[in-house]
Image 1 (cartoon, rainbow, N blue to C red):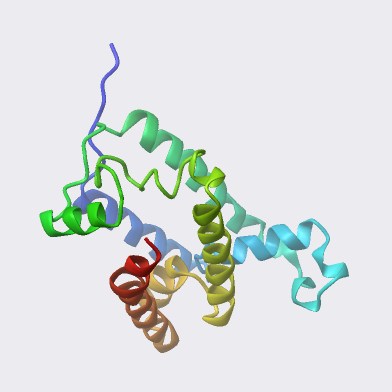
Image 2: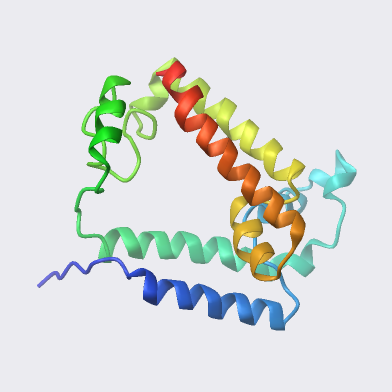
Length: 185
């Protein structure tokens, strides 16, 4: 028999995240995904081309377990904890997305119009993914970290720059969702 479980509720996953953050703070470590890209580029030899990649990458090997954990955790979540239910979107949001030519909004976790193998054959979607990726990469460097690093580690350790960054992330997300995305689609 193949049982499909519901995803963990917030009252289980939230305290688990808090516990992990307490452990990281206790051991003097910080959490963030964007720093792993720097580590992987350094391992691949990027330090020969830019001073930014010249650092003791072996001190960050522990953080690469976060990437491995995210990959394994994502696989487990999709294969064993997913119940294939639709996302419960606000009806107004569904109408707005349908007006932007999104088919079946909420039926998948991310829209197939942007995140599928068929989407990368569409020049418009491919350009959006490439430009979006470059902007996210630039933004994480400019902000000194990514959303997970600032929102989870930075806020839990009461860092003012992280509070400012998270406010900026939310403002940017609101602008993108309400003004820029409708112009693109």
